[in-house]
Amino acid sequence: MPDNDTAKDASDYALGIPAPKHAFFLKGLDHVDWGMKDRLSRIFNPKSGRTVMLAFDHGYIMGPTSGLERMDLSIPPLIEHADCLMCTRGALRSIVPPTANKPISLRYSAGSSVLTELNNECLLDIEDALRINASALAVMAAIGSKFEAKTIENLVRTADLGARYGIPTLGVTAVGKELTRDARYLALACRICAENGATFVKTYYCETDFEKVTATCPVPIVIAGGKKLPENEALELVHKALQEGAAGVDMGRNVFQAEHPVAMIQAIRAVTHDGRTAREGFELYQTLKNTR
Image (cartoon, rainbow, N blue to C red; front, side):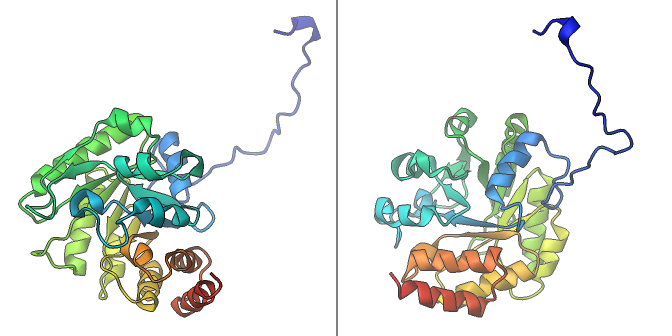
Protein backbone atom coordinates (compact mmCIF):
# COMPACT_ATOMS: atom_id res chain seq x y z
CA MET A 1 0.00 0.00 0.00
CA PRO A 2 1.36 3.49 -0.79
CA ASP A 3 2.16 5.87 2.04
CA ASN A 4 -0.49 8.49 2.68
CA ASP A 5 1.96 11.38 2.37
CA THR A 6 2.90 10.38 -1.19
CA ALA A 7 -0.63 9.73 -2.45
CA LYS A 8 -1.75 12.16 -5.13
CA ASP A 9 -5.22 13.64 -4.85
CA ALA A 10 -7.61 12.47 -7.58
CA SER A 11 -8.67 15.29 -9.86
CA ASP A 12 -10.31 13.93 -13.02
CA TYR A 13 -13.90 13.60 -11.87
CA ALA A 14 -15.47 14.62 -15.22
CA LEU A 15 -18.03 16.69 -13.38
CA GLY A 16 -21.04 17.48 -15.49
CA ILE A 17 -20.78 14.29 -17.57
CA PRO A 18 -23.49 11.81 -16.59
CA ALA A 19 -22.63 8.14 -16.15
CA PRO A 20 -23.33 6.21 -19.37
CA LYS A 21 -26.31 3.89 -19.52
CA HIS A 22 -25.84 0.68 -21.47
CA ALA A 23 -28.96 -1.05 -22.75
CA PHE A 24 -28.35 -4.71 -23.53
CA PHE A 25 -28.52 -5.56 -27.21
CA LEU A 26 -30.91 -8.52 -26.94
CA LYS A 27 -34.67 -8.21 -26.65
CA GLY A 28 -36.17 -8.39 -23.19
CA LEU A 29 -32.91 -9.10 -21.35
CA ASP A 30 -31.87 -5.71 -19.96
CA HIS A 31 -32.39 -6.88 -16.39
CA VAL A 32 -30.70 -10.29 -16.33
CA ASP A 33 -27.48 -10.68 -14.37
CA TRP A 34 -24.00 -9.79 -15.66
CA GLY A 35 -22.95 -13.43 -16.01
CA MET A 36 -25.94 -14.22 -18.20
CA LYS A 37 -25.24 -11.20 -20.38
CA ASP A 38 -21.63 -12.25 -20.72
CA ARG A 39 -22.63 -15.75 -21.86
CA LEU A 40 -25.34 -14.41 -24.18
CA SER A 41 -22.81 -12.02 -25.72
CA ARG A 42 -20.73 -15.04 -26.69
CA ILE A 43 -23.70 -16.89 -28.21
CA PHE A 44 -25.11 -13.84 -30.04
CA ASN A 45 -22.90 -11.47 -32.01
CA PRO A 46 -23.23 -8.06 -30.31
CA LYS A 47 -22.74 -6.27 -33.65
CA SER A 48 -25.47 -8.04 -35.60
CA GLY A 49 -27.56 -9.10 -32.60
CA ARG A 50 -27.85 -12.54 -34.19
CA THR A 51 -26.42 -16.04 -33.92
CA VAL A 52 -25.63 -19.05 -36.07
CA MET A 53 -25.85 -22.05 -33.78
CA LEU A 54 -24.82 -25.49 -35.00
CA ALA A 55 -27.05 -28.23 -33.62
CA PHE A 56 -25.75 -31.78 -33.56
CA ASP A 57 -27.55 -33.16 -30.51
CA HIS A 58 -29.83 -35.38 -32.63
CA GLY A 59 -28.15 -38.58 -31.50
CA TYR A 60 -29.52 -38.31 -27.97
CA ILE A 61 -32.87 -39.55 -29.29
CA MET A 62 -32.10 -40.71 -32.86
CA GLY A 63 -28.74 -42.46 -32.63
CA PRO A 64 -26.33 -42.24 -35.60
CA THR A 65 -28.57 -40.28 -37.99
CA SER A 66 -27.43 -39.37 -41.50
CA GLY A 67 -24.52 -36.95 -41.45
CA LEU A 68 -23.69 -37.78 -37.84
CA GLU A 69 -22.54 -41.37 -38.28
CA ARG A 70 -18.97 -40.20 -37.63
CA MET A 71 -19.31 -36.95 -35.73
CA ASP A 72 -15.56 -36.87 -35.25
CA LEU A 73 -15.24 -36.39 -39.02
CA SER A 74 -18.32 -34.35 -39.96
CA ILE A 75 -18.52 -31.81 -37.14
CA PRO A 76 -14.95 -30.47 -36.50
CA PRO A 77 -14.65 -28.75 -39.92
CA LEU A 78 -17.86 -26.81 -39.16
CA ILE A 79 -16.96 -25.61 -35.67
CA GLU A 80 -14.97 -22.52 -36.64
CA HIS A 81 -17.90 -21.16 -38.65
CA ALA A 82 -20.51 -21.50 -35.87
CA ASP A 83 -21.18 -18.90 -33.19
CA CYS A 84 -22.35 -21.56 -30.74
CA LEU A 85 -22.47 -25.35 -30.59
CA MET A 86 -25.61 -27.13 -29.41
CA CYS A 87 -24.73 -30.67 -28.39
CA THR A 88 -24.82 -33.30 -25.69
CA ARG A 89 -22.12 -33.59 -23.06
CA GLY A 90 -21.01 -36.92 -24.50
CA ALA A 91 -20.44 -35.48 -27.97
CA LEU A 92 -18.78 -32.42 -26.51
CA ARG A 93 -16.21 -34.38 -24.57
CA SER A 94 -15.64 -36.80 -27.45
CA ILE A 95 -15.22 -34.61 -30.52
CA VAL A 96 -15.07 -30.88 -29.69
CA PRO A 97 -11.56 -29.60 -28.94
CA PRO A 98 -11.52 -27.39 -25.84
CA THR A 99 -9.22 -25.10 -27.81
CA ALA A 100 -12.11 -24.32 -30.19
CA ASN A 101 -13.22 -21.69 -27.67
CA LYS A 102 -16.86 -21.82 -28.74
CA PRO A 103 -19.82 -21.25 -26.41
CA ILE A 104 -21.79 -24.40 -25.73
CA SER A 105 -25.56 -24.72 -25.59
CA LEU A 106 -25.67 -27.95 -23.64
CA ARG A 107 -28.52 -30.38 -24.24
CA TYR A 108 -29.58 -30.37 -20.61
CA SER A 109 -32.64 -32.62 -20.80
CA ALA A 110 -32.51 -36.30 -21.73
CA GLY A 111 -34.90 -39.18 -21.87
CA SER A 112 -36.89 -41.37 -24.21
CA SER A 113 -35.79 -42.19 -27.76
CA VAL A 114 -37.58 -42.41 -31.10
CA LEU A 115 -38.26 -46.07 -30.26
CA THR A 116 -40.69 -45.09 -27.50
CA GLU A 117 -42.66 -41.97 -26.59
CA LEU A 118 -40.58 -38.82 -26.96
CA ASN A 119 -40.30 -36.06 -24.35
CA ASN A 120 -40.48 -38.24 -21.24
CA GLU A 121 -37.36 -36.50 -20.01
CA CYS A 122 -35.18 -35.81 -16.98
CA LEU A 123 -32.48 -33.22 -16.33
CA LEU A 124 -28.71 -33.47 -16.08
CA ASP A 125 -26.68 -32.42 -13.05
CA ILE A 126 -25.99 -28.67 -12.93
CA GLU A 127 -22.50 -29.38 -11.61
CA ASP A 128 -21.62 -31.15 -14.85
CA ALA A 129 -22.90 -28.16 -16.83
CA LEU A 130 -20.58 -25.98 -14.76
CA ARG A 131 -17.66 -28.37 -15.28
CA ILE A 132 -17.94 -28.05 -19.04
CA ASN A 133 -18.46 -24.28 -18.82
CA ALA A 134 -21.83 -24.34 -20.58
CA SER A 135 -23.01 -21.01 -21.96
CA ALA A 136 -26.66 -22.12 -22.12
CA LEU A 137 -28.82 -24.98 -20.89
CA ALA A 138 -31.17 -26.34 -23.58
CA VAL A 139 -34.27 -28.08 -22.28
CA MET A 140 -37.29 -29.46 -24.12
CA ALA A 141 -40.79 -28.09 -23.58
CA ALA A 142 -43.48 -30.31 -25.08
CA ILE A 143 -46.47 -27.97 -25.02
CA GLY A 144 -49.70 -29.78 -25.80
CA SER A 145 -48.35 -33.30 -25.35
CA LYS A 146 -48.95 -35.79 -22.56
CA PHE A 147 -45.56 -34.77 -21.11
CA GLU A 148 -46.34 -31.04 -21.05
CA ALA A 149 -46.39 -30.72 -17.24
CA LYS A 150 -43.19 -32.73 -16.81
CA THR A 151 -41.25 -30.79 -19.42
CA ILE A 152 -42.48 -27.45 -18.08
CA GLU A 153 -41.32 -28.54 -14.62
CA ASN A 154 -37.93 -29.34 -16.17
CA LEU A 155 -37.85 -25.90 -17.78
CA VAL A 156 -38.70 -24.15 -14.52
CA ARG A 157 -36.07 -26.08 -12.56
CA THR A 158 -33.49 -25.31 -15.23
CA ALA A 159 -34.35 -21.60 -15.23
CA ASP A 160 -34.03 -21.54 -11.44
CA LEU A 161 -30.60 -23.17 -11.57
CA GLY A 162 -29.57 -20.96 -14.47
CA ALA A 163 -30.52 -17.86 -12.52
CA ARG A 164 -28.48 -19.11 -9.56
CA TYR A 165 -25.34 -19.68 -11.62
CA GLY A 166 -25.75 -17.09 -14.37
CA ILE A 167 -26.38 -19.57 -17.20
CA PRO A 168 -29.10 -18.76 -19.77
CA THR A 169 -31.89 -21.28 -20.36
CA LEU A 170 -32.83 -22.17 -23.93
CA GLY A 171 -36.43 -23.37 -24.11
CA VAL A 172 -36.78 -25.77 -27.05
CA THR A 173 -40.35 -26.19 -28.28
CA ALA A 174 -41.07 -29.82 -29.13
CA VAL A 175 -43.40 -30.44 -32.05
CA GLY A 176 -44.60 -34.02 -32.21
CA LYS A 177 -46.61 -35.72 -34.93
CA GLU A 178 -49.85 -34.71 -33.24
CA LEU A 179 -49.01 -30.98 -33.02
CA THR A 180 -49.41 -28.41 -35.78
CA ARG A 181 -46.61 -26.03 -36.68
CA ASP A 182 -48.78 -22.95 -37.17
CA ALA A 183 -48.39 -19.46 -35.73
CA ARG A 184 -51.09 -19.93 -33.13
CA TYR A 185 -49.42 -23.00 -31.64
CA LEU A 186 -45.86 -21.72 -31.95
CA ALA A 187 -46.77 -18.38 -30.34
CA LEU A 188 -48.41 -20.25 -27.47
CA ALA A 189 -45.42 -22.55 -26.95
CA CYS A 190 -42.81 -19.79 -27.17
CA ARG A 191 -44.70 -17.50 -24.82
CA ILE A 192 -45.10 -20.27 -22.25
CA CYS A 193 -41.36 -20.99 -22.41
CA ALA A 194 -40.48 -17.33 -21.93
CA GLU A 195 -42.94 -16.76 -19.11
CA ASN A 196 -41.62 -19.80 -17.27
CA GLY A 197 -38.07 -18.47 -17.33
CA ALA A 198 -36.47 -19.30 -20.70
CA THR A 199 -33.84 -16.70 -21.53
CA PHE A 200 -34.25 -17.41 -25.24
CA VAL A 201 -36.36 -19.87 -27.24
CA LYS A 202 -35.79 -22.27 -30.12
CA THR A 203 -38.79 -22.98 -32.32
CA TYR A 204 -39.83 -23.68 -35.89
CA TYR A 205 -40.59 -21.24 -38.67
CA CYS A 206 -44.07 -21.14 -40.17
CA GLU A 207 -44.96 -19.61 -43.52
CA THR A 208 -47.94 -17.62 -42.25
CA ASP A 209 -47.82 -15.00 -39.48
CA PHE A 210 -44.41 -15.95 -38.10
CA GLU A 211 -43.90 -12.28 -37.18
CA LYS A 212 -46.74 -12.75 -34.67
CA VAL A 213 -44.73 -15.53 -33.03
CA THR A 214 -41.65 -13.34 -32.63
CA ALA A 215 -43.66 -10.25 -31.63
CA THR A 216 -45.49 -11.99 -28.82
CA CYS A 217 -42.39 -13.68 -27.38
CA PRO A 218 -40.65 -11.27 -24.97
CA VAL A 219 -37.20 -12.89 -25.42
CA PRO A 220 -35.13 -13.73 -28.52
CA ILE A 221 -36.20 -16.59 -30.79
CA VAL A 222 -33.83 -18.75 -32.83
CA ILE A 223 -35.29 -21.03 -35.48
CA ALA A 224 -34.69 -24.72 -35.94
CA GLY A 225 -33.87 -25.94 -39.41
CA GLY A 226 -36.04 -29.02 -39.20
CA LYS A 227 -35.89 -31.62 -41.95
CA LYS A 228 -33.32 -31.38 -44.74
CA LEU A 229 -34.27 -28.94 -47.49
CA PRO A 230 -32.55 -28.11 -50.77
CA GLU A 231 -29.81 -25.60 -49.99
CA ASN A 232 -31.53 -22.66 -51.71
CA GLU A 233 -34.76 -23.36 -49.82
CA ALA A 234 -32.95 -23.61 -46.50
CA LEU A 235 -31.33 -20.21 -47.11
CA GLU A 236 -34.72 -18.76 -48.03
CA LEU A 237 -36.06 -20.12 -44.74
CA VAL A 238 -33.25 -18.40 -42.85
CA HIS A 239 -33.76 -15.09 -44.64
CA LYS A 240 -37.54 -15.01 -44.15
CA ALA A 241 -37.31 -15.93 -40.47
CA LEU A 242 -34.76 -13.19 -39.81
CA GLN A 243 -36.83 -10.63 -41.70
CA GLU A 244 -39.82 -11.59 -39.55
CA GLY A 245 -38.08 -11.14 -36.22
CA ALA A 246 -35.93 -14.18 -35.48
CA ALA A 247 -32.62 -13.47 -33.74
CA GLY A 248 -30.77 -16.28 -35.42
CA VAL A 249 -30.80 -19.94 -36.34
CA ASP A 250 -29.96 -23.22 -34.64
CA MET A 251 -29.58 -25.56 -37.60
CA GLY A 252 -28.30 -29.10 -37.89
CA ARG A 253 -29.51 -31.30 -40.73
CA ASN A 254 -29.56 -28.44 -43.21
CA VAL A 255 -25.86 -28.01 -42.51
CA PHE A 256 -24.28 -31.41 -41.88
CA GLN A 257 -26.53 -33.17 -44.41
CA ALA A 258 -25.83 -30.56 -47.10
CA GLU A 259 -23.85 -31.63 -50.14
CA HIS A 260 -21.11 -29.23 -49.03
CA PRO A 261 -21.57 -28.59 -45.29
CA VAL A 262 -18.72 -26.08 -44.80
CA ALA A 263 -19.92 -23.96 -47.71
CA MET A 264 -23.48 -24.15 -46.41
CA ILE A 265 -22.75 -22.90 -42.91
CA GLN A 266 -20.75 -20.02 -44.36
CA ALA A 267 -23.66 -19.10 -46.60
CA ILE A 268 -25.99 -19.17 -43.59
CA ARG A 269 -23.58 -16.86 -41.76
CA ALA A 270 -23.63 -14.42 -44.67
CA VAL A 271 -27.44 -14.25 -44.63
CA THR A 272 -27.58 -14.04 -40.82
CA HIS A 273 -24.79 -11.60 -40.00
CA ASP A 274 -24.03 -9.77 -43.25
CA GLY A 275 -27.57 -9.07 -44.41
CA ARG A 276 -27.25 -11.09 -47.62
CA THR A 277 -30.44 -12.15 -49.38
CA ALA A 278 -31.23 -15.82 -49.80
CA ARG A 279 -30.22 -15.58 -53.45
CA GLU A 280 -26.90 -13.97 -52.56
CA GLY A 281 -26.35 -16.61 -49.90
CA PHE A 282 -26.96 -19.37 -52.43
CA GLU A 283 -24.59 -17.75 -54.90
CA LEU A 284 -21.96 -17.68 -52.16
CA TYR A 285 -22.66 -21.34 -51.44
CA GLN A 286 -22.17 -22.20 -55.11
CA THR A 287 -18.91 -20.28 -55.20
CA LEU A 288 -17.54 -21.80 -52.00
CA LYS A 289 -18.47 -25.38 -52.91
CA ASN A 290 -16.60 -25.05 -56.20
CA THR A 291 -13.43 -23.83 -54.55
CA ARG A 292 -13.06 -26.77 -52.19
